[in-house]
View 1 (tube, rainbow, N blue to C red):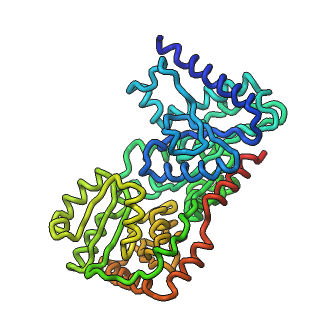
View 2 (spheres, one colour):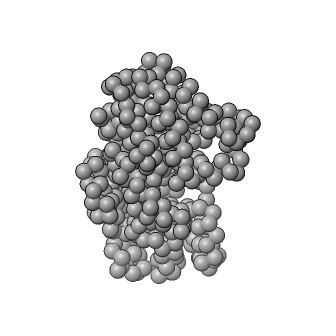
View 3 (cartoon, one colour):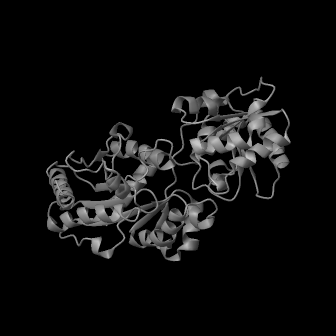
Length: 412
């Protein structure tokens, strides 16, 4: 088979998929997800999609993912099956699928072409293309079909953060220019923009004022509060056990945690769960701390091991300058572990001031040490469990996030 036949065959695959969906008898929106980043269980986008998929499935909405994913990770989600005769597993097509400029245009053209050809297939249903990861929406006006009858076509964009625009330090050339060129196009192409937090919406509007009318906040859900883990957190260890979970980026400030350890000689023990790149760098910079047994570096932890680490830690540390939501901080709180964090982004919305302690950029490693000790005292207070209950009652759930998302999918 020649490569020139690939677009035609992919178009046929889309057409058969649409016809099958139309004949299924399903009602409600037909939703397509871009799928970028959904092959990495360690990524925030993966968790975001997985949790939403679980709740949308209960609402009888089964998104179709336009990418290669492992379906067992996403209950109810379907994917477009690519026949083995099409060489999409070659390096060339892998590059296309991972290309934020090219992939949405390819997908958009295949999808829209067939919607235009068959406008009556989905009478009374919305056709929704949802870019889950900041950029992946078809951004050309020519890829926006004019639907006939009562069917409507909608584009939805989730914006997790604008960090590459806020601080380009350590950000790749490609990502900087994607946010400079492609991100504004995706924002303009979206009918609705979902922001993970109030901070994300505020920074979006500061950079793109025209987005204000269509940007809404649908907070990520938080894990259920584990009251058994919250009770009786009296420390029996000589060292205070600290935990941080993050991939390595300059703005995440994992290096700063090594300064905190050195400022409190011998009294703190820190575990950092990071990526392979981060483990290598931190091992080099903190070789003395590793040798002393005060620094432990882990990668590729299972969910069970992560939960155990959250529960067994005395304090969770979140030193990142920017976070669109900070799911790890929510995970830590759900296990009764107080959080010391960097103020100024969405972590502040997740943690607040009752069950955690926020510090500004000007605070020194010693200030963080003092805050950690106060956080330990906070967790040992008899009112801490009640404070956690009250705090969690004010945070969002994945169920409520999915219900709000359904409203957006169904909007005309």
